[in-house]
Length: 424
Ligand code: T4K
Image (cartoon, rainbow, N blue to C red; front, side, top):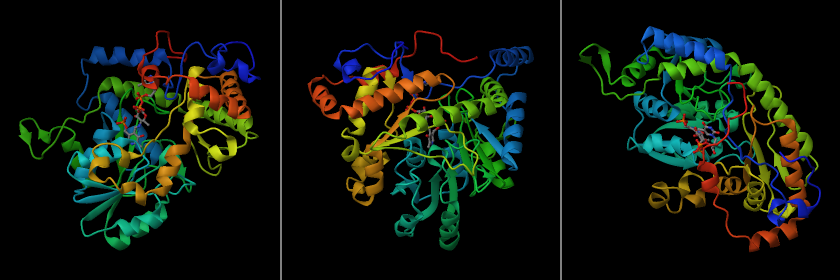
């Protein structure tokens, strides 16, 4: 980071000023635990000659997660997308399933992959989670289930969804990819609905390199998913069910167990980062930093900024370009909404008419970097860039109009040429 404070618009990189960050700041840099502990586990694994297929690290990982969440079963898998596919199949969802469009594409694809139609529901613009008031009007004779997504770790309105599912005879489950370590009304997320799915992808607050898990208290469901994630094998030479390969490897479980040992440190770092962003941005007009509920446990893994163009003079996309020019690779999750991506936009070209809150939120949200790889100085600088750009909105707009489009995909897809900061 360059040692200066950005005060005047001329110092912004879009006007030719020096870049604020020499190396890109990504959203989704992994939080890394102890390198020694991880490597010791890898050595154990190699000594044991047991690399995958329900090895001792996977079993230990499942037990630790189930105990933490307080459910009977944690079924670990290779990632959350496969976990969603397996659990929806094991729950025998068919026909139509109601999901928010404001989610990562995996929630919808896991259904469509199995010829189940995702029916896109609008969100509550305040919480960014599925709006129960809109769910009921989407139910048809073909509807079999509802998948709520605890977006950014904020719990869905679990009670309202449970009541609708009960009354209409539907299966309710949750995509809890963002919500490991979070609670709803003091209860750990992972305990709600028929099942909940966590993601432990590298970019998540807690990672197992790649990984996911289904949490459930249903013995039969857990047994079925264990068969399904292992080709349907009930024993050697005995396939009793249609299955796939959804197994978590020992390397992933070793990383997961190592990450677990630093969970509270990651949470504290994320919390500190969130509070720093809040402090620095609170007086900037036209921005809303999404709050975390102090009464609940949170993982603080996403810093969600909503940009109100009419109040701050810049659109979300313009602000993203200003940051990108400084090497701050803020993201537009979940833009433009699943309903505007293929195959859904071809199947349902008018879906946006029923999704006004999704349309509006997905045009306003900017996700900022956090996690163990950035420090409080970095956050102060990011916030100064934002405040400076907004203070000089007209000039920034005019300058951006003359600047050639920056290829953000190129910046995002390049792996770092330098060691990532962090412990591991
Ligand atoms: N449901 C929901 C609601 C989800 O948000 C997700 C995933 C899923 C289901 C499915 O879970 P998994 O099947 O993945 O377990 C990222 C993540 O890949 C994805 O897991 C996550 N949600 C989504 C919100 O974000 P992309 O395609 O936007 O970004 P990606 O993976 O290219 O990484 C983002 C940035 O992180 C990169 O610009 C650089 C940085 N990065 C990434 C990796 C992998 C690193 O610095 N180091 C790394 O090792 O999806």
